[in-house]
Amino acid sequence: MNITKESTGELTAIVKIEIVPADYSAAVDKQVSDYKRKANIPGFRPGHIPTGMIKKMYGKAILADEVNRLISDSLVNFIKEENLDILGNPLPNLEKSQSIDFDTQDTFEFFFDLGFAPQFTIPTDTDMDIPDYRILVDDEMVSKYIDDTRKRFGKPAPSDEAELVTDEVPAESENTEKPVPAVKPVIEPAEMNPEFYNTVYPGLNLETEDDFREQVRKDAAMSFEAETDKLLFNSITEALVKNTEMPLPDEFLKRWLAENNEGKYTPEEIVKNYPSFAESMKWQLIENKLIKDNGLEVKDSDIRNYISTYMLRQVNMTEMDPEMQKRYEAIIDTFMQNKEQVQRINDLLYNAKMMEFFKATITVKQKEVTYDEYIKLASAMHQHEHDHDHDHEHDHDHEHDHDHDHGHDHTH
Image 1 (tube, rainbow, N blue to C red):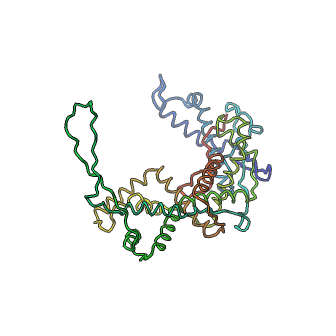
Image 2 (image 1 turned 90 degrees about the vertical axis):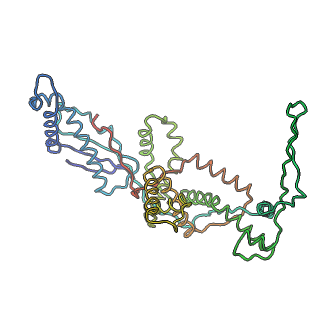
Image 3 (image 1 turned 135 degrees about the vertical axis):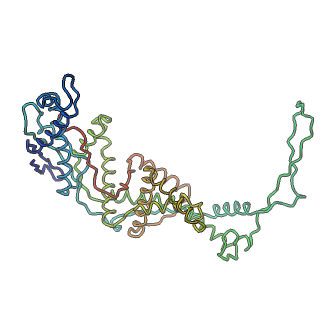
């Protein structure tokens, strides 16, 4: 077998695979022998069917299968051995590949186009202007939170001030029984005093209303942090894509999109949507580089810890005996068998590690916005995400190389 690669552009190349009889003869003969031993043909005892008949009946199909297997295996191995960082899948080059005749040919040539991932430098934070929107917790919001909290920690009013509530019976009703009075509490909001402050925030030793209001403000701001971090993450990824100089093998990728969508999109639709796809591809390449260069990794133990901490947190670990611990681990093992669940947690943990990395390395500019302004910003970002479809999964097996699918038949 002979495999060669020839560059056809800055980020493209063509691979030629030549297969000769020495590459497949032994495997084909073995398959013929297996067919001879197992085939059931009327008029012949099993194992006594003439070899010539087996070759005539099945030889072409056996040869085609073996050649196709050789192409797939050799292409995958060549890409790995040459350490080629390709995008998408190799695509058959229909212009150079000739039709195959297994009746007359014993040597076969196949040609494949490859598209390569580009080399690029991720910009530093000094090259970007990234806003970090934080929701302004105003006095009105603080007061509402305090009013709700006072009611939650309030006490029932004295019984002599309770309101008697009766369900009136319509005059035309045949029910002549008198309604039973029901007592409806009139809750008294908790008093604004140190006892209340430290019931809400134990251990902080809050003494004044100003201290309490400031803690409420901090608490409310913290409750918004998860949401504002999502917006920040999206702002950072958008800025990285926008500011990273990265050429792509555009024509190859357009063809790859067309062939992998099996006619789902017209050529015009692919051209129209290609810029959005290119942005998504750029972010995936940036993300993979960040993960690889900075050792950002999610292990099985991280996923198990997440399940233990967040999904089974109602279990009291300190009171577990060995038997209970064993059952607990079995529950986690069951969770780990759910591939969709594990993949979801894996992606979540990767994003968390990425966000932690961003906060440690990228300078952002905090901007306070009202809650209503934040909702508008988040809605606009959500629409942008939907239009550009940035979402993708992180490979749970921690292999960030591209998956090369060569299972289709190359021998048509």
